[in-house]
Image 1 (cartoon, one colour):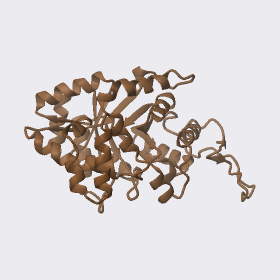
Image 2 (image 1 turned 45 degrees about the horizontal axis):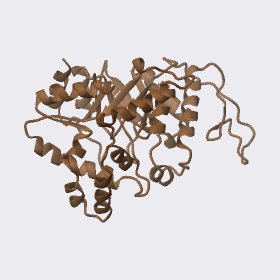
Image 3 (image 1 turned 30 degrees about the horizontal axis):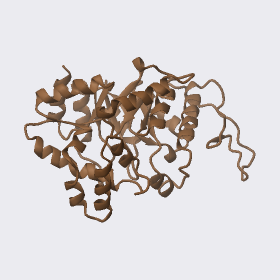
Amino acid sequence: MKLALQLGYWGAQPPADHAELVVAADRAGFDTVFTAEAWGSDAFTPLAWYGSMTENIRLSTAVVQLSARTPTATAMSTLTLDHLSGGRFCLGLGVSGPQVVEGWYGQPFARPLARTREYIDIIRKVLRREEPVTSDGPAYTLPYAGDDASGLGKPLKSIVHPLREDVPIWLGAEGPKNVALAAEIADGWLGFLASPRTASEFNAWLDEGFARPGARRTREDFEVAFLCQLHITDDRRAVLDAYKPFTALYAGGMGAEEKNFHAEAFRRMGFADEVEEITRLFRAGRKDEAAAAVPDEMVEATAIIGDEAYVREQIAEWEAAGITMLVVTCRSVEEIEKLATLLD
């Protein structure tokens, strides 16, 4: 089992302590630090900053949104950061949802799995640098061949030679088809709102992907990283209650009401009735009531909260479910140092 630090994306202002947390995580032996993006700060720029302050910790996005950049632009950021960090960069990708893709980026959301496959294929062509990059589409055509094309576009090969031709690519995925795709074409799966309680389901989805012709990895060399609200505490009640607004937001308030992938993830865990009630309250603006409607078990499904003995026991259960990395959020250097002792 490995530990990773999730910094997420910025709120209204840049966080003041993230650099301090990353340096502490590097010193404590955390495997990876992740940054994210929504519709504010981007995921790449902070990693360049933090990479200059650290020596060993891997730097990864979780996740870069496909529709924010063309695949060649993402490949450029990937090879640049990999050089700057001395080969410590990993690329975490995700499709986001229709509200963001169409509302913020002005791109169509349709056919997300096909677009993901095509996107990763182009990135790998850029990094291999074997020949000028071309793509027949349909989502990404290189050279561009639309009705308004100048006809002057030509296939190009990256000016910069990559430090590594095979930078790890991880996919953020929640549904069965997307998880199977991650096992088939990626180097790891970034599980969000995923839980050991559904291990039989998600391991079956992974096995489907591993069994496909041409799959890149096997179970033995594939990363399974789960976001986990991990807290060592003697006041379990207070921590559970503190996470209920977060759970209510993702179960009832994220995305469009008729297409909330996070809500579907909670339904697969067995909380369909709870999700319906939480959504009704949240969409009516009754957010406090929505949080109060979240049962303890719904928080516990994606969290490990308790005293040290309980936490160690639960980590062993998550590992037995096939999870290789716990991605945690920390608010202080002391918390990072305390969590690091769990894997001694």
